[in-house]
Length: 322
Image (tube, rainbow, N blue to C red; front, side, top):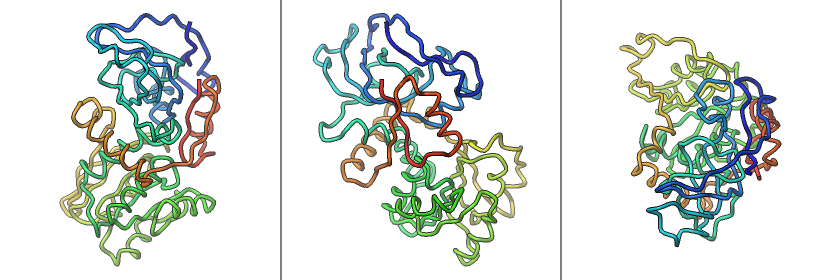
């Protein structure tokens, strides 16, 4: 029997319950992984509340672990290999699981479980945003909402590494220093702040080149007012709630903005993009460019991890230990 976290029904953190399941041997082109660290992401919360489907009832999309068995068409030499993965099929909140073999990517021995699981999927998201959605160049000005959060810190570090000026927003004064340590050149405090006015002052009326908004709610409309003509806005989440409809006229022609809704789950479903993103992330972890404060929870405490993440009681990354 394998210990897992099962979602009883869509709803609050209390719907996440410890359970045990039988795990079949790995099938063709599958590997069995004993998991050592499991990433906790806002995507998992969206699964829990029912915004995204959860076919097997077990949330989670990334983990680090060790291959303990392989199915047919997988080299037996992979047994014992230490790996990381992210993406579908969902079901990472488990002590062990089966996984498509191509998902399991080998890890350098120099990297710890914590350093990888605290960064990996969020890092691939950052790579997608900063290299595919809008290829950031030296001299660009980038707006990162929730710059003290797990993804926000990685976006800030990576954009800074590329030579961009980063303007970060945070929800409270207490998180300002976290954003600055990650490399934010300017920090705007408060979700009710007048972002557009502050950014107009900081950019001498020009606006930012690229804005990344994972807050959603009414914040996205405010974000549109922060971007220069022909700039790009990426809407990547809605931690503050559903996003009201946006009319095409809100984007142009006067503003001439480009608005995208990129999905990292869609991105990592393409093998070439998955491998490219993973290689870049692992390399930057090794170089010390990407790092995150990481807070561990026992697997059976997944509900508490969700509650803390959802309430903003943490900065950095959270992960589960079976």
